[in-house]
Length: 575
Image 1 (cartoon, rainbow, N blue to C red):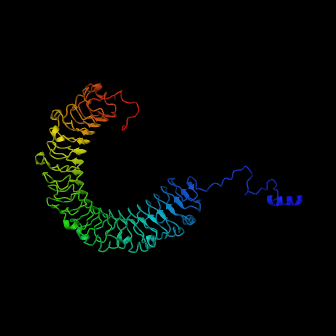
Image 2 (cartoon, rainbow, N blue to C red):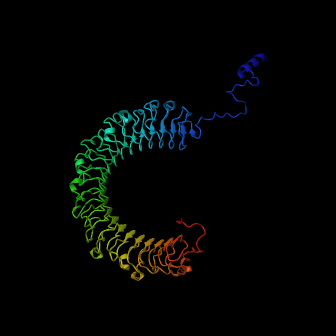
Image 3 (cartoon, one colour):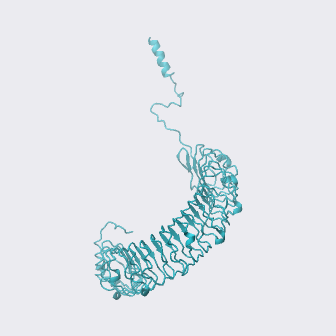
């Protein structure tokens, strides 16, 4: 019985080992069982078994010891000039290959380079020196970025027959229509994003993927969209055609009519003389700035029932450019930009829901009592750099604009602050006018005003009547720069945090100059007539939050000592 038990133990434990003959698969008791070190190319990092990162190492040669298990390989920002097929063919499991910003030429990229990468999904070869696209890319591809090369030609199987392909980036190349074959995307019916901007296309390429949602064609030489070229792209949501050579003859009534989901259309910086016809109903943003449009016809916009943003800046809209009621059918219109035209008055009968009206740099010379009555929901009104004179601004012109928060009247010919301003204003800009007096009445009731700019006028301290600032209880920023003030105006608003007094004639700052502004954080006094002895040391004692004082460009260098009563810890909002 004892012999049987001994044999059983020997069978279970195995034969005894002799020194120097241990089985390496079974380490000694007490030894750690650490895995062997992971193979990684010199100077690269391999945070995971399937990831190799060799970014920015100034490599001139493709690393030769990359693990076959690699799925993600990044070699961007190096000096590589070629991809050796024998090295690339080993990496059959690659899903991501990033070669961005190297020196790879088409000669350094053999035709068969990608044949052995059947699982490749993301390929980034932007910012290299390719003159033609690879003839073949893997069928598994999802994202292909060949932007910022010198590509003049792509081939049918570069992007064709790729059922999983979603995004193609070819911007900043040298592609003409001759280099883009008609079957370039045949069999790739899932592409949603295509960027062909900054090339040399002369017309919109036909046979684009019907699945497109975003199409970038800006900065080309496009003068025509062939009839039917966009008839199949019914999923298109964004179309960028700005900075081309499109004229009215290059479009027709059917060009955009099939794009039932189109939301964003940019046709700015072209040569259009009229708003295009056949705009789709889902259109939300229409950018027509910097064309040659002389008049907006209501019929051209009637189909775009969902339009919210209409941008018409820098066209040739004259006195009859926006006829009364031309935009009234656009009931959802939120923002209208028409700056840089030749309009002589605010367009009448605008949509009631309009929230932002931007009209600077026109020829508007008058504001009548009812010119803005149709837009009671306006929150932003910009009439800067027109020809408005105080005598031609009706005292009830702003009466119905109870939602107005920002009013810009800079660069006009106003000699006084307009009356009847809405009580809810937050920002009022009156710089670069001809203001010669400030009275309490026009500013009365503006207890929500936070920013007031009166710069570049002709104001003197004696022109500011007592009580002018009395009701501006929320004012935080006041700009009185570039006027004719000889000292700091008294009784400034208590909530003031930023005061601009630069480029005046201030020669003296007395001890009581800032008694009414204990919250002041920034004070600008540069380019005045201040001397070392002309600022009372006590002037800043009651300003514990002051952290910016600018006194440069005065006759003498003026050094301001911040108040010793200020807290020792860094002040909030100070640099």
